[in-house]
Image (cartoon, rainbow, N blue to C red; front, side, top):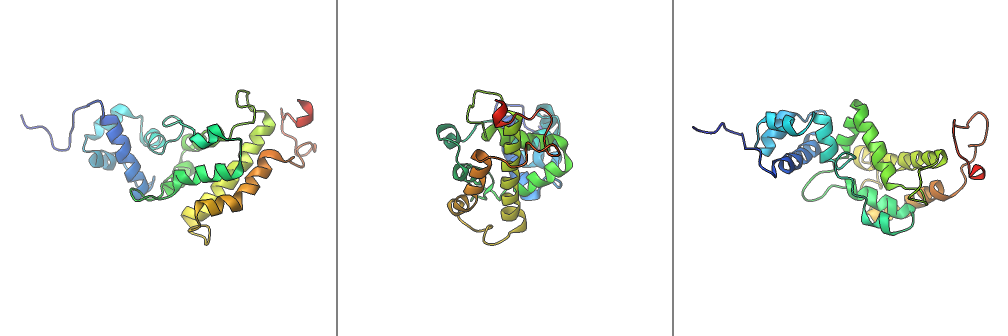
Amino acid sequence: MTQKAGRRPGKQDTRSQIVRAASAVFAEAGYAAASIRGIAQRAGVDPALVHHYFDGKVSLFIEAMGLPGGMREVPAELRENPASGAVIVRAFLRLWDATADRPSPFLSLVQAVSSSPLAAESVREFIAERIRPPEADQKPSREWQVRQALIGSQLMGLAFQRYVMGAQPVATADPDQLAAWVGPAIDRYLHEPLPGLALPGLALPGLALDGDR
């Protein structure tokens, strides 16, 4: 019997084949335009096989983009060096910069987090995993959560200007140059006091301030 065109048996490497195909399709077409059928066609498998391995497009996106739920590996420089704004910026840009093999997947990320709370939560977790408190074995305090959110806003704003808006010179600057420009702002969020956290109108429930620890 002739095997149905486009269908491939569920071999051990089929899942990784689908993930590679999804990464390419998301980067080229964007999250909104990408479809399970198109990803299956790119991978050379039946769409039913994609559904066998993944709950849907969101879970496939999370793994293909290396977000929590998929590739959880923290870049080596973030494990081996003290927290540094420049190091964080360089590691972040390396995730999203275009390469010879793929365009930047950041536009797909923006589309995904805009349409899916699950994807947005994954991105928040993704950033938090890589921006750890100085005492990495301790649970982040509420103050550290504020710092993480501020750092995330700086990084996502930088990426939006670079990959979506194409604002110059951010869009074409070397990552080392951007690290030199933006790193000090990240360092401020990492290490300097955050004014206003103790004010009654701005205090967060459960916030642990430096003087309370």
